[in-house]
Structure formats: structure tokens, C-alpha cells
Image (cartoon, rainbow, N blue to C red):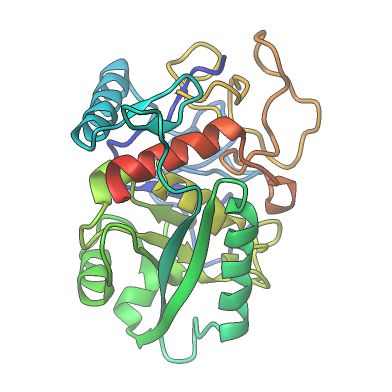
Length: 316
């Protein structure tokens, strides 16, 4: 059994791309050095790190955070008359699960600085198609409601989480309720590919949503990270999933039974990698690892069940 946690306490989940993968203006600031082979800035959230950088993710979950997150999740289910069955599904007292298919309305906010960042609609359409393909087996479909383009250089250039610019942007633009996915694209600072709010901390608030580097959408210019799976990964966090390597070989983990334990994030596409003595090779093809977009192809049945349960608890 995997021992990982879909942690709901941090306000956002970050993706960070390594040196050389982004244009020269995106340099990491305040990075920490370490053995994990990646580079990340200090934040209040977790990071997806790309191959070829240096440092380690400083935001591992403590046992207290794990326990608190699970209590919040369990209480939210209880408040709705639900509980988890043996397979991790959210069910009512009669054993009935929520709707098999959930349609998620999407508002796509394209932030620009003049002509910079002016993503064509064709790339947005392809991004929605990538999400629908990835989440089909989980029972989620994404329907684009509207695309809004906003020319604001302050919001576009060097956008980072937790800043006044992020708050102003989301306060002005966010639409919909707890079930609505708002996506924002911009030129991100700190070598970030994107970040997302978690269900328990963001659902329904003005800050709720996913922020993406504009060039990470399908057809972008970020080598190995331009097939649209930055969005897939971040929407996974928005749905309540944590990284496959959360907790390492012996940590509390993501509470998903069928994601094999993984000592550290994988980079590139290292087929056959096995960093823990527990059964199963590392889940390098999972959307919640750190591998290249082309390597990411799947969620497990347990992750699918957890997303539906988190949805029922916080967004349904």
C-alpha cells in the first residue's frame, strides 16, 4: 500500500521548471541547495521540479499537517452524510456514490502585456482536450464556458503566488462557484510552470483556481513541458491529489493504495526506476510525478476515487 497524502492545507501547489528550460528572464530567486537535483524557491506550497536544476522541495508535509488534512477531509464528508468505503469512494449510508460523471465549467483567463501572452483560441481548445483525455477515466469532463483576455502588464510579468498582483487578478476575474475551474495564464516568475489551490483551502474563494505559464499550453516553447500536462498536474492538486512521492518510502503519503511508494520525484522518463523496497516500480508515468509531459499518461483507480471523494467533500 502506498503511504502518501493528498494534503489540503497549503493554499497552492507549484510547478517549478529547472534552469535552462525557461527563457532567460525567468531566474529562480531564494533557491535552496540540496541533494534532490532540483531548484525551488521558498514558498508556502509544494513544487513540481524539472530535470537539470539543483536543490530540494522544502515543503514536505509534517505528521501534524497530515493528520489535520485528513481530519478536515473526513469532517467535510461527514457533514455531507458521506464516508469512504473500502475502495476509497465517497458513499452515503446506503452505499450509493455521487454522480459517475461530473461536468466542470471552465473560465479561461488569458493575461497579456500588449501582444505578449496573447494565446490563440486554438491552443486553449487543445488544452481543454488534454484535460478531458486525462480525466475521462476519473469521471470528470471540462467544458469551456468563456475565454477572457486581459491586458495588464503588472499581472502578466513575473506573476508569482501569494502576491498582490495574484490577488488583484483573481479578485477581478474569478467567476463561478465551488465547482468552477478558473484558469489563468501569464509569464510566471521564479521559474514556475504553475500553481493551484487545494479544495479545502480554496473552494469557492476568490483565490481558487489554477495559474499556468502561458508557454506550457500545447504548442508552447518550453521543451518537454509543452504538451499541456502542467495543467493536468495542477488540476490534480485542485482536485485534491498530492504528489506520488509525498512521504517518500516511509511517509504518511497520499492515502492512495495503488500508487507505489517513491523515495523522491522522478525526472525525464526513467523507465524501471524503483527507489523503495515496497512492491512496485516508481509511478513515473503518473500525472502527479515530476516527469516530462510525454511521460505522463495516467491516474490510478485509487487517485480517481480520491478525486471524486474530494469533489464530493469540498466542491460538489
